[in-house]
Length: 390
Ligand SMILES: *Cc1c(COP(=O)(O)O)cnc(C)c1O
Image 1 (tube, rainbow, N blue to C red):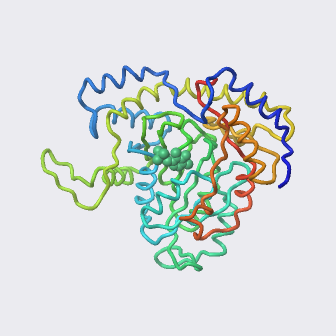
Image 2: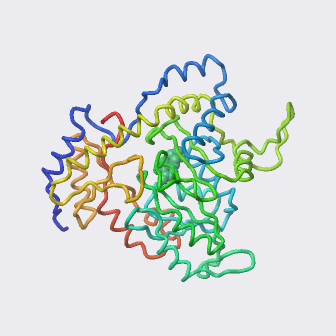
Image 3: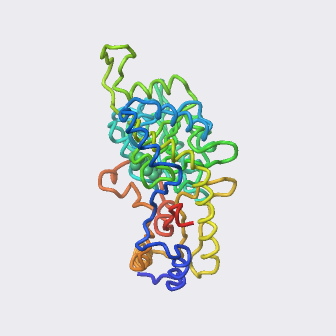
């Protein structure tokens, strides 16, 4: 094992400085409730509208459109369900492949696998840790077989049905570069912006360039509805399709129960949406606190040998969902020793994710070279980022 080049005591002291006198252990990300959440949830209970219909759902969806600039938002039970709906809406079906990066939360792959599709891993861009347009282009160059009814992987024989971009840590990936490659092959782009509410690249909010994008409102995300997610799109027909798929494909009718195909029950309950409305009304305040905390990390790690605060990609305005530290280590064992030392101090530093192509259910999935992702896995760690720490 290579000894870590990181100054361990300096690393721990800088973390101590950032989290200050917060109660230990300090978790990676916990919710903050500054927006009248108690009152909003109580009002919802008092109204009796707690389930899959009610005024807070529409209000929450409208607010999501205002915040992101998307023309349509469909609120659903969680981000994983939102992804499955988005993949399905662009035509992903059993035995298809979905191109995606391996450095992401497992849901990006699970949502495809739940439809019977197969993740196909492509490397990340070192600048933003999202899917690399260059790696995608060279992978397609190697494997794509254009046929009358679509693009096929000539090695596996399976149809390639979609490309998924992920905005990891809340860092906006270079979606337009990836989209150019996807467009050249006629492949629909789905954006996993689960972590990226409030993140922008240029004039565009994360999740709003692909055919569909998704958000998560899990308890560890920047805004929470307890559990929840949303599908974003500018395409009215796709929005209607997602809404139908999420609502048991029930035909609108004043009293009949008529369903015209097999579909899901994935709509967000009004009770969760009520919490979401209160949280979204505090989004600007939450983003300001997140930015202040990021500044504190930047300052605290300015002079620690062997570790640096990794800022969001240049040219973006990120939500700072998770603060990322880049370690000068060459093995996962060295990384894990530093993480363990932080945990002994009660500071919940964590690795990003075990790369998906190493998980047992995905370790035989097709892939291109994944060198950049494999280096990121070793060198990047995430540090406590709750808004209330600022
Ligand atoms: C959180 C997350 C999801 C899934 O969201 P849930 O609401 O937890 O189902 C999907 N993708 C990424 C990248 C995430 O971080």
